[in-house]
Image (cartoon, rainbow, N blue to C red; front, side, top):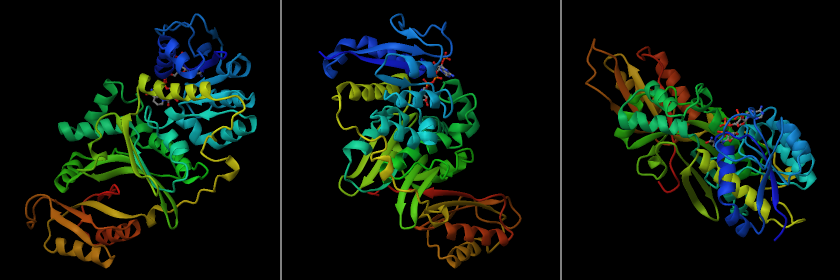
Length: 440
Ligand SMILES: NC(=O)c1ccc[n+]([C@@H]2O[C@H](COP(=O)([O-])OP(=O)(O)OC[C@H]3O[C@@H](n4cnc5c(N)ncnc54)[C@H](OP(=O)(O)O)[C@@H]3O)[C@@H](O)[C@H]2O)c1
């Protein structure tokens, strides 16, 4: 049997401790499958004295991640600390500069520095593997990077943040407000004490930027993503969506268009009978549409110690099985000098269906005026409905719901501007984009 693969792990939290446990429990099985043993020979975290429920007695403890990456006698550096800056950035860079392979679950780091790190990996003949960074245990990176080579991808989209999906599912199933569901998510440990990063869509955006690069062969453009979180979604929107045959999900969508690549993260209405609409709670899903394979949809655990460690382990096992001197898979699917510049398609040019919820004063002629303003902007309506009682002079403001056929964001924005000018609108309109799977 070949020499053992020596790994150094920086970060022994939820994912790191699960990984150490699995490597110990399945030592024999992994040695048989990979043709060589996998040994954890070096570790680090912030607090040396914390009991992590795993045996670390055979591993050398390093005081910090950069010195582990720089000095430890290892074949693979596994980064499980998180964060786009230091120590993760410097440690990963130090390992790659030594020609040491890197496995990481850190989407924030890759979104910020992925291409720079991939270039160093390439120059030094090292691998940069990061299956766990997007959609946790779902093997979407491998699908895009390896299995779908040769396909031209037209759209990739998915539910990639378990916290948001848990909140939206709970709002719908238990008729609770956004705030109540967020509190419950925090109590159960699904949401951070500061949940902004998840609920504002940034976490999904980081993951989407990686999928975009792999799908379209472009440089990562994590700062160039249209972003809307779920904080404005009300129980009224969820009810209205259900009445119309839709569910609301926070989707990350990257799409090839004539004017460039659209990258957007926003609450989205998906047809109730589509598979993605049925993905509930903390589960993740990613759909990839391509010319040769067609539509591929993967659903599974997007987070959690074991599910994430499973993906990290797969990356480590790939390295254990690789032959010395073999040609490496480039980190983002193609050599960094062959990555195309990213050309952003403006959100204004996005074409699709829209759900629009308007609150209006109960004045005669409002219905007709709204329909006219829509028509003026070339928008054809699939439905227009009054969500409560008849409009009656002098009564409470009423809700009107519109669903459009495919139109442009530009037209919708102009129509709303015109409606605002009529003086019967109360508050801000709610606009939710509709996304249809290819088959729908
Ligand atoms: N948890 C998930 O479900 C999940 C899913 C997908 C991807 N990920 C990614 O996996 C990575 C790890 O996540 P996690 O949930 O395991 O995080 P975590 O539970 O917070 O653990 C982080 C670990 O990193 C250590 N650490 C933090 N800052 C450090 C520093 N400056 N120097 C040395 N060690 C430091 C911590 O040390 P102490 O223990 O001593 O504090 C801890 O062991 C992140 O990139 C995350 O985005 C996580």
